[in-house]
Image (tube, rainbow, N blue to C red; front, side, top):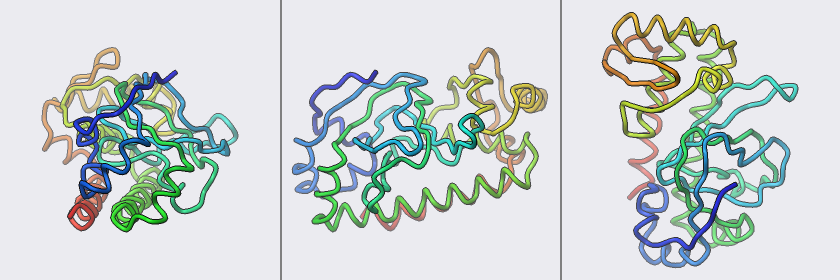
Length: 243
């Protein structure tokens, strides 16, 4: 369970959405935010559950999973310090549409959903930033759907590892076979084969969930074009919203 404490201005700047707000708007938000620590595997949302809080990750990473028949899953998005969890609250959605699972432990700024809706309604700067970010999330979900239907698992795994690297700003991170299987919507044996293929090409080292990317350009070449499409969409959104 997440533990909470008051948030400081220094902590907010690690989240790019909060850091993009004008100083006066950020000052108004600070009393409504608290720092929470989340652990790997924590489930922050389940589909159709009421959304009672929204999260702005600092150094944590949250996987958004579409769920079918209560057990089959597919990752449709990834939220790190560049974004927020619960953005659809601003659009009037009061229940979660995905399962949100912590992929990397760390901290996040948490805010009550009702307070966020009230602030969003009268804050043009927050509206501008969030509208651009929700566009990015939608583009990400669409491209992942296309990728999952038409591209081979090895390329999809390469894309997933590159996106994770970008969110964490690190070539080393921990992802278990089980988590990747849930994210990619495949069996664990499929993840094992795909990871072995990438490792044999000298692109990654993968042992007991510990991943190190050895060749970023090579891994990008092994990935499908979906990685570049999602990356470009995110960069475009940030360049227009974070001004």
